[in-house]
Image (cartoon, rainbow over all chains, first blue to last red):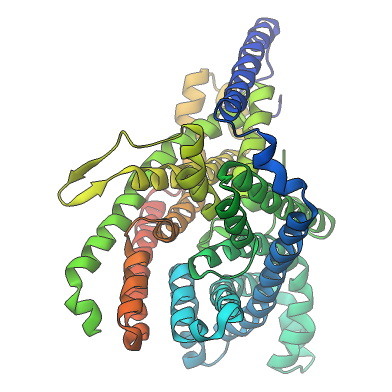
Length: 288
Length: 228
């Protein structure tokens, strides 16, 4: 780490000192891991009975089909809707007409600031409650569309603004109309930097599908609840569910990072931190 | 609207819980996140790697699953918060509240860690080299040149993380704390015909709180902006 702003390249004595620290920290980390496993073992959480559902084909298929697939389809539907809504609101915020700009601005600010759970419960109680499982499913999707749409609106706006101004000026000079400039010149060039950010937003949407727990919608968390209520194996179930979410999100993040490296570069010009979601520092690159 | 006005005491108390969850886990997550960030950018490679893995694992787990872990899985392995059970000014701080507090802190601190790290990464290497070149010591370089810039650069992402935390406190309502979201759900349940107005009132309170946080952060940022 000779390139850190925080410290110089270590000399021979510091290297020796660091070696001692390394040994100590490895021991501490191993002790922590050991403690966790010992605790699991001592409280009988490592018994075969507790883990049996996760090697039983019936439950594995429930986890993968009713859990992972449903969660992915909810997240997919939510992001699809959010892209459409976000595109509308984002273009609206760039409109030449003041009323349209203001309405879109207010909608974006409102849906970005309201917790998703509140939206979800509103949609569920006013619309979804009479429609069984599909009502809960679409309540979750609807709430996620509104929230992520507002976030994506900011992304679309920022992505369009990141296209050099000369591009649109040149297009106007050629006699194109505003619509043509947006759809033929600005959007196609902005898409390149928007796509990795949109995929990162998919991670947020995917994690938020778990909030469907509050309205008993289908999905991975719901399947998990069924399993631990039946087998009283809370610890293994939560671990398995968490690992499945982590696996899905890691794949998405890897795809986003790969596309960004290939088409954009190390840092993305779209500043997401103001978009009001938990993305602080996510686009600064540098994985493990 | 009537539903909210008739129950204004309960609604206020619910937002009291929301505020308590936000303030306590906000401060705790800033402290824990700073420690994590220090390890994450420190000179010990093993710790850097370990914290990176830990942060990636927690960040990719939904908050609800983290909270469920502390609420229902933790007690099975001796991770209980029963030792906390006090009532202060009508607010009860029990094991459920504490479990949610711990879950929110654990989850948010990983985002704080990344926000601080991105702030440190934003300081150009030349700044440290120049500070050394004019003869500043390690402490001088850190306290006069690097950390002030790093802190200013991490302010926007830190604000974003804290705003997200404010909204995320509602998830605690889904696992047993009677804060704003849980209160709204029970009101909606009791007054089904007024569901929309109840939502509008609760949502607008959240919008005001978020805008206040955001405005405060902008003001601080403008004051402290580094001249570059």
